Image 1 (tube, rainbow, N blue to C red):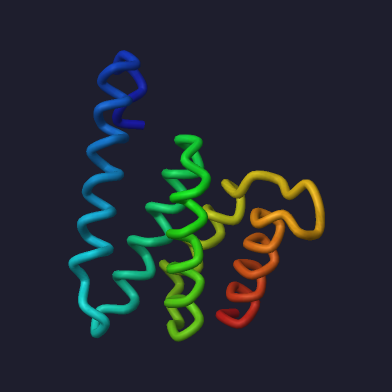
Image 2 (image 1 turned 120 degrees about the vertical axis):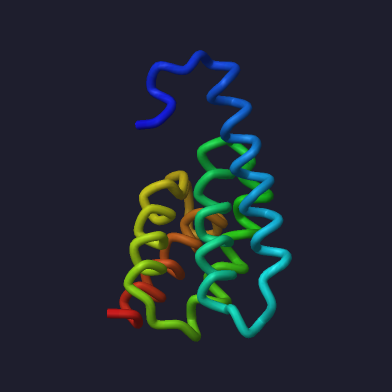
Length: 112
């Protein structure tokens, strides 16, 4: 990994810059670039979950799911699998993370 030897401050700065970059990309891609917009949303949601920003991550995951339902892409499917592994475990049937887990799994099943 590129940042393995970097100190915590450098890694934090890098992750924040990556969040900013992905957020900008998501908001700037037009509807005609739905695949790229979906990939940006998926990657942003994954990174936000890793950073503990669950509310924002959930919003981005919702965007990714909405966009991904219209797209067939092996790269997007790979990104969705990473998101699926990153989702926090759901505590109960009405937990948003559990619902997202089922919905992402459903999108992946449709893409196969």
